[in-house]
Image: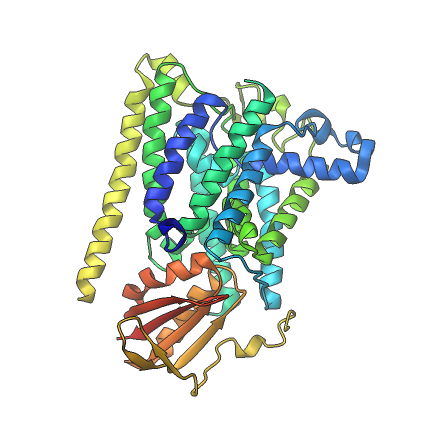
Length: 163
Length: 197
Length: 103
């Protein structure tokens, strides 16, 4: 199939996703990832800690671990879809970062992303594909924040690599 | 809709989105970073087109009172949180979407980033409390709470209710702004192509 | 498998015997420099290419080995800014070869 041989134009891909997202908006809610990831964190933590988890107020009041929360399945669906796409186009192979600096930056970046999502209560997907199209004022604040952050991050990256 | 139906719809949507993102190599991080670091706009253009379609679609349905809007209050915490997120996503080289998509491609770095996103979320949940500043439901009841830096709830639906002007009108305005940015990028690319030939 | 950056200093491997490459239009070119970016995440391959392009002499052919799909797609649009030409992207078994030439 042609789709699995060459790269799809991102404008076409994102237009299809936009139309599907409008449909999702009517059925359950706009595309979001951060909420699902939080719920997964809760489920994993519950698996390891059991009833101990109830002593942390966050998991008792805001996100009670619940496996039937629909946002989890968007994330799992994306994983599934990309595995299918990678296998059909023969692009699936393990890629392992080889530089120590890479591992350190990924670790720090991952932690910052997690903390940022929880502090803001939104992630970048809900900012660009949910809040701003709904004209929520928070969306504009988020966009200004993420642009400033990406700028600072680029500076750090350039400094680390010295290039 | 039953929870199972919601989960199924979400899974189908996620699968299609994941497949399309994998095939088109779209990356939300790259959309912001490449525009600043390398002055290339491949992903930025796609992001802008997607936002234009979504703005019209969402505000049109909000005008007639349909759809499930996100109930998030406006607050300074969003700006701070996304600032941290922005630094993190450039360092990790992937945002929330691309970590999942690249994990599906077998990128160990992305799986590692995902793991630490979970750990970061858990660490932050430990210092969270119901009442004090890091945004809590206590101050997120759709009313302004200045001491918690929360400004209440405002989106196209509340605008429509307050001014009586249909939300689609504001949507069109935002569409034009986004389209203006898109046009400026196209013109800049044309200028660069001209300078090279 | 230099996981802990023992090979940090030889990020750019300059290999004079890098060999030739045959493009799809039948031309065979000698490669002047190979940049090995296997396993690197975005945007390191782009930065490496930028660095190498700045040092390369006019007419040099550079091969960038990438296994990160988003970086692979990001190289060709960068070429206008870096005063280079993207010749071809060849898909290999486990990575892509992006062939670029400095103008």
